[in-house]
Amino acid sequence: MQIHVNTDKTIERHAGLDDHVHNVVSTALNRFGEHISRVEVHLSNNHAQKSADGEIRCTIEARLNGYQPIAVSDHDATLHQSISGAVEKLKRSVDSTLGRLYDKRHATPDFEEQAE
Image 1 (cartoon, rainbow, N blue to C red):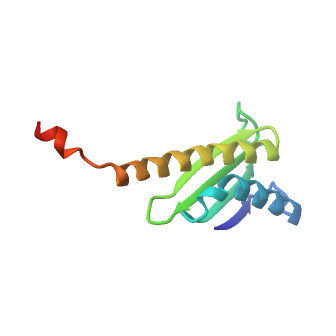
Image 2 (tube, rainbow, N blue to C red):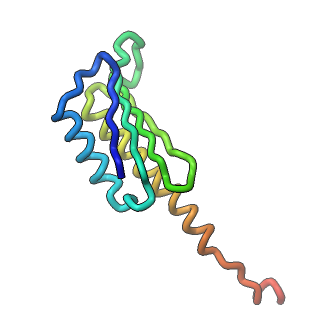
């Protein structure tokens, strides 16, 4: 799973930030690793656009092999909080999506009950 970090001009990107994002994302999505080819993380500061939820925005898009990408975002007061919030949303969304796909693949009609 490739993890790419992108920032706007208001967020200072440095090795520590990249390492933090990689650690948080890979830890949260580790169990889905074989299903996810790439994760794009976008960080921005919406200071110019006052947001009721917070100024820092983290948007994450996960590319699932063979399926549509899943995108989530979170606004919070700090960079670490917005990253954590978005990662938790993504984890739940990927789990839900893959769970539904697994259920559809393994659902077998009960022909004996239908014949009765």
